[in-house]
Length: 394
Image (cartoon, rainbow, N blue to C red; front, top):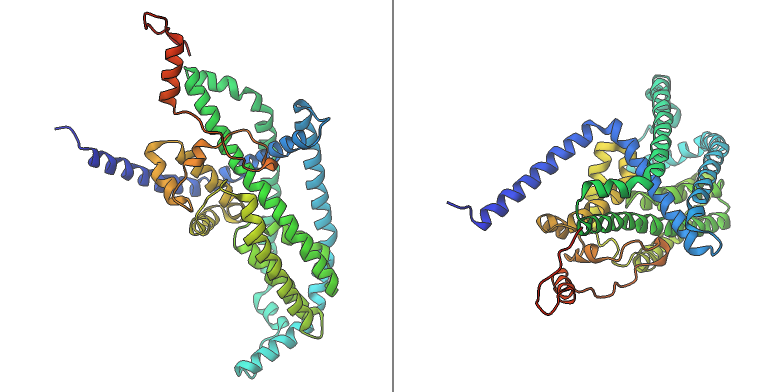
């Protein structure tokens, strides 16, 4: 007896769910190997998108020169960022130590408000924590970070160097021209979706960082430039990054100033900046390019953060974008893309015009005839009066 359509769909969906569970377990098990590779792919996409922006914005830059220029500029920016952090981190840490008496006073006042007679102090907490026992953990974490960064750079170099051979691999993988075109179009949509997300996050993060820097400079907060840089970095982490960027500077303003008004002003201004950027600028720039449900963003942050740590938190939304674009390409997995989407209509991910520079926005795609109709029309043109169609050769 032949299986019914409903039983076949149930079997397929069950296999998809099992594949997701097994895939998640494999991702967690191979985290040490896959995390540098994922970060390298993330970095390669950033550099490739930057190259296309340079080609699009600078008239004198050709396609051949755009990629080397993007690599050089990216290395200069990353190197400058590392130097900036190294120069300011020591001063920032020393100021935290100087704020210890003020923090003790705030803890004492808070304890009095809740009825605690003998509140703990920062010195007592430090003694209980015994920082000496964490020196080895910190050193190991720093060593792991440097090792991961080295692997990321090596992987990214190989990925960028081998991008020219991608077409030859596609020719070997797919025998017909139509299959190759579909595969290239799907790959370009995945890349464009990730590039668009990175572009929007970078521009909106820069807007938030600049506005926050002006506000912090106006109230006289110490290390305003360093705080602005941290706010720009955490903007790549959904939800959590925005919360930290709004709350952390006012808390340190409470430690620095004798009155609460600078902290109140900072809190109000940073919230206002977040509301304007998050509710007006970000949606207009993003448009329908991502179309991810906010609940899915939170779940992705929790999932990727649990299996890959901080790197997973940074990559949670780009990886979800990539997964959603892939799932939208096939009818068998389109239902998962529908669940992940914000409006239940992920079809535009399949029909999006590929190979658009990330700074060009998401222009509406011109209507395209269905494949069957286009094939029929092409067949009609290629037939003679006898109606015999010429054979197609991939």
